[in-house]
Image (cartoon, rainbow, N blue to C red):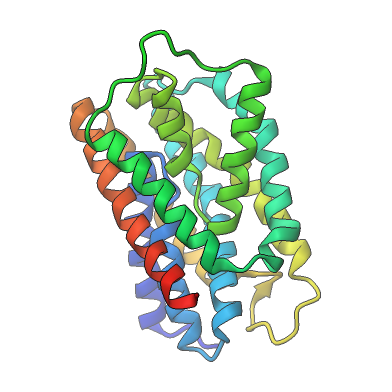
Length: 272
């Protein structure tokens, strides 16, 4: 597998775009990365099932670096809710480990994709319409946060995304301000990615016919180029997030979620 200039340019552009989205919206950019990395790997002779799984794993690995870059910019403005990070992180690690170590290699993806499309569409509609949560609703206690973290980590591990598509709607539903939710989601990307990447590496060690420069399910050339570029634009996205009005930011995030839902619906329907 040669490191031709066109490949490097493609991966670099992908990294720049996903880094900006990570900082702007608190998402890891996984749903942009996964289809493009799948196409690139498929064009290099990797089978479709393995290409998708490697794209998911590689996308998740880049979030380790993107998260560190974007959360630094958000923290400088004091928007990260570290109390929520500490409450959600244990569940995230457990959910991510369950997804990446076992279910990832066993689950049929078509039905998951259809369910996921419906869930994300509902979340996007709530945010786009700017539905106000009940003013008395509060962030749940320790048990509730661990449970919510488990769901976030599990779903993230199955689709290779940083969890913002679940954690941001969850936090705003609990009356956490949107800017705090986006910043906190960026911080949550690190434990989400770390837990899942360990699982992807372990579960992929016994695989045959991996492309060159692979580490378990992770494709190292894409990880290196995308991570190097994404850390440059993540702080730019974080700065832009704090200059946008709340309603506009919610609608931008909802629009991204609709694109995600449409992609997952398509993948589910063609695979049934």
